[in-house]
Structure formats: C-alpha cells, structure tokens
Image 1 (spheres, rainbow, N blue to C red):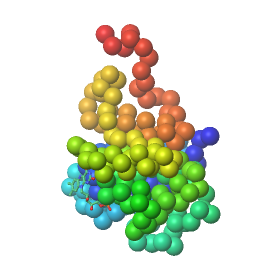
Image 2 (cartoon, rainbow, N blue to C red; image 1 turned 120 degrees about the vertical axis):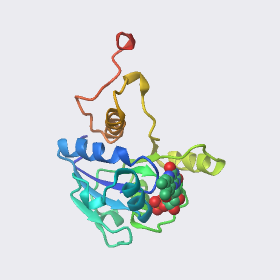
Image 3 (cartoon, protein in one colour; image 1 turned 60 degrees about the vertical axis):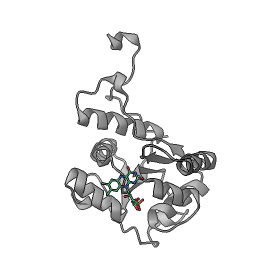
Image 4 (cartoon, rainbow, N blue to C red; image 1 turned 90 degrees about the vertical axis):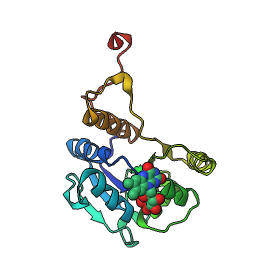
Length: 191
Ligand SMILES: Cc1cc2nc3c(=O)[nH]c(=O)nc-3n(C[C@H](O)[C@H](O)[C@H](O)COP(=O)(O)O)c2cc1C
C-alpha cells in the first residue's frame, strides 16, 4: 500500500546528499513527511550540504528531537513507515537496545512495537562486531537495514544521480515505487 504519511529521522552520519532527493521523491508522490533531526545530524547537514534543516524542502512538520510529546512518540499516531537517513551506529545501537533517549529513538521503538516498516540507512565503515550484532538484532525485530550503497550497474552520471537512485531504493522499501527511476532491465543495459 502506498504510504501517505511517514516520519523521517536524520542523524549525524555522512550521507546528507541522500536527504534532498528522498524528500523530493516523497513530495512528488504527495507523501506527508514529519521530520526529526539530531544535534549531530544538524551539524553534518551544515558541513556536507551547507544547509539548515529548515532549508530542506518537502518536510511537512519538524519536531524537536527532545519533544516526547510529538505524535511520533506514541503508537496511536498513524505513520505508515519510518525512515532514518542517514542512520548513525549510535542511533542504531540505541534502537537495538530499546533506549529511547530522543524522539528519533522513541519513534523507531514505536515503529517496531507497532510492526510498522522501519528503514535504517546505517552508515559506517568498517563495521565492528557491535554494529553487526545490532544490525542482526534489529533485523530480527522487524527493521530493514538498508545501508547507503550505490548500484554502479545503473551507471549514475553524477553524485545527484547516485543519490536519487538510492533514495528510490528507500522509497521501494516503504512501498512507494517511483516509475521514472533507473532500474535494471537486463544485460542489454550492461553494454
Ligand atoms: C562529519 C561527521 C561525519 C560522521 N559520520 C558518521 C558516520 O558515517 N557514521 C556514524 O555512525 N557516525 C558518524 N559520525 C559521528 C556521529 O555524528 C556521532 O557518533 C553522534 O554522537 C551520533 O549522534 P546521533 O545518532 O544522535 O546523530 C560523524 C560525525 C561527523 C562530525
């Protein structure tokens, strides 16, 4: 079923270039986006994209990461899915441990308990044992671990193309299939 309202968590990992194309694809499909950004997310967004959160287009409502009165903190709010992009290993660890230290952790915890799609674009390299164990625990709990990894066989022409293609993979995971995205059509494409 096509989502109509999602919650987006933005945390302080590298990969902020994926956020604008994701918001663009969601806006193009009339998906409402309530967003929360961590303090480190705010810093990395400025460092990498030279943007303040408020300058991102396509967000319906922003919520403070310390605001546990926000709708996403309760299972009675009806979000169709949650995406954390990019997702730090710290935020992943908090969710895996059931530690609701901020609204992003809490909303993810709610998504898992309510059996709603939770997509974590975890970014780190290399991965240590704790990261891998947390990924497995979250997979078992129902999350989708979807690290930002480009598909080079789709031959993106530039960074924007690569970012848009990955943003499309995130959309696929929440049941939103964007028609005009590059998709593998078989070996003819590989010439
Ligand atoms: C420029 C920059 C890039 C970072 N990249 C990553 C990363 O790719 N993955 C990660 O797990 N942490 C990364 N960090 C560290 C996190 O921001 C830090 O661990 C922070 O405590 C995470 O908090 P948050 O999950 O609440 O955003 C980066 C920090 C900076 C300043």
